[in-house]
Amino acid sequence: MNFMNNVVLLEMLKKQSKPRPIKYQVILHNDNKTTFDHVVDCLMDVCSHNELQAYQCALIVHNAGSCSIFVDSYDECNLVHEQLNKLYLNVTLEKFKR
Image (cartoon, rainbow, N blue to C red):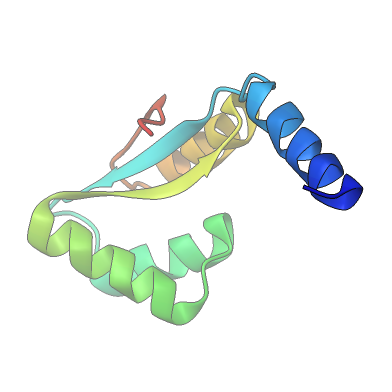
């Protein structure tokens, strides 16, 4: 093994040994109150989804009942959770399951 391979291997080991920050997720749940278009618009505005991504998430929620729509730190997820709640979407905040 040459010197460069050792350096790369050492860097990989350092990255693996660092504790991962705890991630959280915002889960969108299906309801009979909000329209499909409203959900898509909210996901684009609040979560910065593009139109296709927002539409796909809304479709998953419609068919499966729920979908993880945003994953980040607790503070970021809490902000998104609060904003979506104010827009009358049925959302929950929980630890991200890897």
